[in-house]
Image (tube, rainbow, N blue to C red; front, top):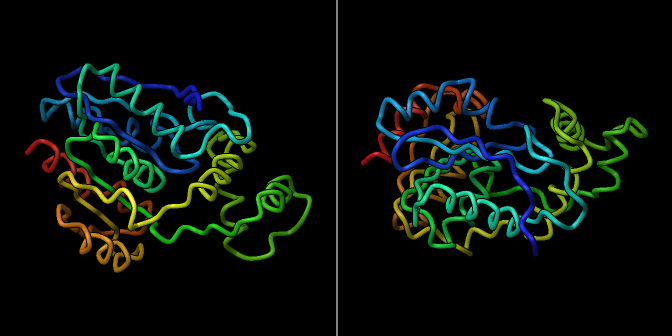
Length: 235
């Protein structure tokens, strides 16, 4: 499968760190606006942010063309542009789930997984979710309503986001598959289901778990997460 076209945001510096954002977010929202490129520059490192399909500056995509394996292939292409055989990677939320699979390609040196959801639903009716996003029907439950609200925010291309969610269900996350073998830091907010991620980390010989203050969004923006991630990848 041909990898999708993804917007790449490079920032100068040695050994650029790959930054992967979450669903309904973007490189700008998760990394540039909070100042990660400057923090990495202060630590002597460059950065490369990637926008997911239909997010940020990336173009729309067609149904069936953007399962995780195809997106990961595009991320490998982005690593190639940095001239590195292996890159350090920081992923958050959906970005962390994709970073998990990316690490299995052998192209990752050190891995930071923040706010990852190892129990992501795989029973979502995409046509029903699409109808909810278009306002044609009321959401049948709170989780569908929340998901519809997410993918219709922050300028995300809603149709592409629907296909992205469909791809995540077709290639569902399996904690027993592609287990990282590189040094891995798993981070979760204290108010964001930390127990599940701590249990996940316990099953990975190369992983360390860290809880930081905040809920899902708060943990990402916390100075504790940024400091720990940058310290880990510059070790």
